Length: 263
Image (cartoon, rainbow, N blue to C red; front, side, top):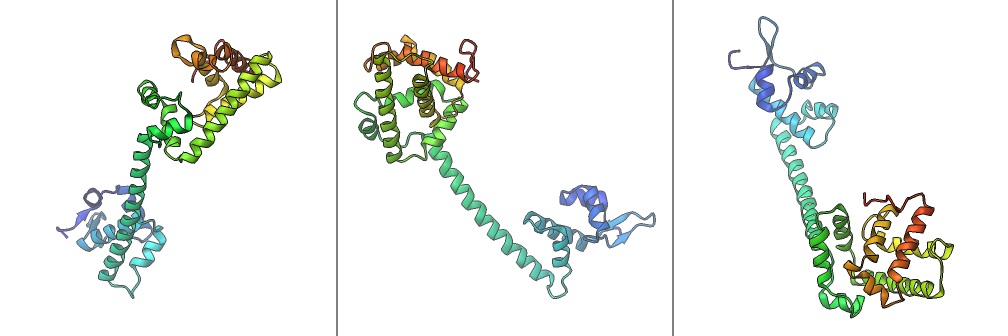
């Protein structure tokens, strides 16, 4: 009896709580072989070995009732139990390694972001596109949750996906320029529809609620950012018109453009 372990020492040895061992004793899963004169539980080496086998099966996802049946099966000896547990563990390790490899692939793709060569970027987005813009954007916003969203989504896009996006943006820009030239008023149904299409193009990359869209409108119309020049080539003062259309559309959706914030 002197070589046995009290419930506290046994619990500390195998890494479970005393309450857990008490519960397993109560349900007959692991009952200590001996008790002291005072009635305290004492765990033998075989008892501790059984606890370890329970832990392995539990880690593998077996319910306690099934674990008890497995351990008490008279047709299976201890060596067979260990062999079965080893087989289950090896299979689980293989599954986990497969999952780790998949996560590593996703991490690598997420970090790399835009999955296009500089030549493909220019071919798809046009000669006005500068491949270094992606790096500049990452330097500026790389720590933001929205950049993480963009990188994760961009990593899954093929050149065909980017071609589709570029075509949609080109058509949108043409329609924006036509509306501006035709004198369409921001806040009109036509302008609101165009603002929603613009918001949808942003939502391809990251979540873009109306308040965040307002912030983008401010950015696009800022002379310091360079977007005003880009849109100005399409129609006179188009960036300011687009900002006003975004603001009016956001207001129609219950957002005050004057107090809208990014988050």
